[in-house]
Image (cartoon, rainbow, N blue to C red; front, side, top):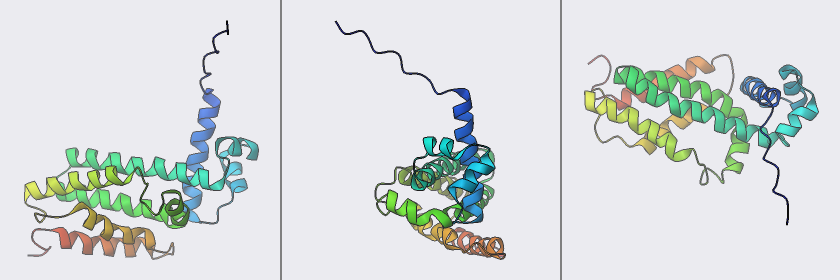
Amino acid sequence: MTPPAPPARAKRTDALSNRARILDVAAEAFAASSNASMTAIARQAGVGVGTLYRHFPTREALIVELYHQEIQKVIDLAHTLAADLPPLDAVRRWFEVVARYGKLKYGMSEVIHAATNGGLDDKNYEPFLGAITALLDAGTASGDLKSGLDAEDVLLQLSVLWRIPPREDAEARAARLLDLIIDGLRARPAGD
């Protein structure tokens, strides 16, 4: 008779803390530069390079995990904003967060694109569309947004945000683009 397998050991608290710290540092590092090195990320996270590679065996593995973590935060926020704010304010706030996320995605887009088969295998796609739909539905119901808006069309508009090069004028450019997108979604353009 074979003895039962020992129970799976839960990750130690310090290992979970190291992993979270690595992801936090990596988010800042990749938002600042797509060329951030694994060694620099480990140093800034206060862990050894070996620890970083135990959690994320490749740069691509780190980027993909960071992408999944950050996009989930953005998705979750849409539903919170839709419940807590007037619809037009919720849309604007969420789009601003998507723009900040775009800064991070700018430097990682090639890896994410490859890891998700050009987006075809992206498990975050439908939930992201659902987040957009929740905001659009609330805005349509309030009369602030046009009826018949398509979440995929809005996603295509928003995708311009992660194509903005990270320069000094990036935030101002993102704000101008968001104004254009929101004005196009409004039932009545601003100023009417």
